[in-house]
Length: 586
Image (cartoon, rainbow, N blue to C red; front, top):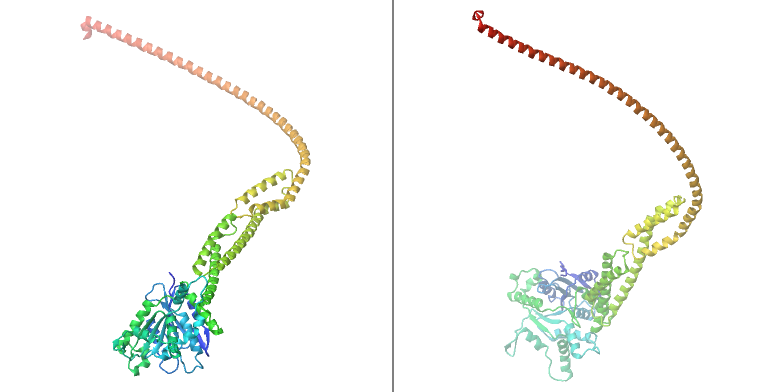
């Protein structure tokens, strides 16, 4: 959703200094920020007729556009006030308050016509504010637009028929809302009550006849009918007592005439519900940026005295809008590529895919912001610019890849180059070591990410530049190898002799150690045999003593047994003796 514009107060859009028109840059910046379609309501009329009051009511505020009570014209130039449309979501209501016409301080009415024309050209609803009634003077004042007919008419293109051209003209010119202030007449004709709209139509109805007087009467009416197919009329009673009119903008509604308050409400309601979006021929909706370009185009044209026709105005606007659309598309492309692309890309196709996506989005931005690019010249211009940017980014990609790869080679192969300078590889076999190290570093280089499409070419160029170093190391290796072989042969012989001497010495030492070992074993055996002999003698002695003890014990046992037997027999004998000789017992 587009952001809404909220202006606290109106600002001057077109300054009128000494009857010379100049666009205010601040107002243009406000318009440039409006991306929504705009509904433009402009009010034109004699000075001191209350135009600013009505616009303040449309804004929903009592104060805004300057309202004064003196006889001097107060609003100078054209002032603008932008706000969200109260009835149309996503639309901006643009109110234009114009300098009063017929200011007696002006030298002539040329400046009035310029203000009138600008309000007419810029608005989608044109409010013509007059006093009391519709009279010939008011019609003649509005007829000033006829002086612009030759400049404002749409040229019929060969591919457009009259119906289409008429439809474009109708969509280009604004709706007319005629407001009659301090209306004091009765709305009736021939005794019949009529509406305000019928009053307006009757006042603009041409007369029958062909004489010059009738033609002079009909000319402004026919012109108004032609330029304003859609017309509306509102009448307003006197708002309050004459003495209170000086404070009109500060008076509350309950101090105003009830009829006037109701009439103002009906007017505002109609404007909000019926005013259309500002539209250019071809159904082109105008937003703030396009309205800004219209302001510049018309003011420049009026200032130069050459107000462009409708078709040229659209073409001029298309030129501005489409040029801006190309710039927006290119800026979007640059933004997308800046966010998505990290140079260098691994492959050219990766970069082209990103370009194609950003190019598609840029084209969508262009199509969204452009209009009436009939011959697609601006789209072709965009394609040319994007092709140039593609070629440039491809060139940048090559350079970025080369720079990245060169930096990597310096970091990776730098230590090897330093080692070569120090003569690390100036020795027999050094060339093989150099080649091995080169292969290791090449592998490390290949493993590094985001080298880009120049990776192999830069590497091969580097290796080619180091071929002389490789050849020098190889030659040094070959020169040192033969000498190294002889030195190695002598070294081998010397080492063999030393080895033989060491082996003889080791054999002698081993033999001596073996003899010592055998001697130690022999002595150990003698000592062991002596110990075994002593142990045997001791064992033999213990065995003999044990046997003697066993024999003694056996003899004691035999003696004791025999003794017991004898004792037993003795007791038996005694018993027998006692039995045979009782006296003995006594």
